[in-house]
Length: 126
Image (tube, rainbow, N blue to C red; front, top):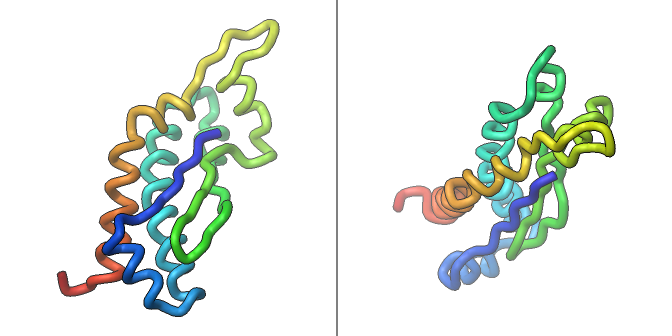
């Protein structure tokens, strides 16, 4: 599993604090989901394939979302439980990680996508 936490700079936080809390949480959720989508896509490309089932079952799970920060996790759906065996390995199988390398490689791009979403939502014309 990988996760992404989005927090804004002072100007972003100032704007979020001016909004109604439900609206601010929605903006933060959208930002976190846009960043997580980048990692999800990269993980889907990295995943070991035989049938493609695991890559189709990589999901974004909502975590803690407030008006000032949002954390979401990227992992696999329960029906693709064997994703953990590929990611971490077992006693009889070497690890073939796909999630953590995706997060490591695309983390900066994901953060930038989240911040871009925040800016677009807070300052639509700017």
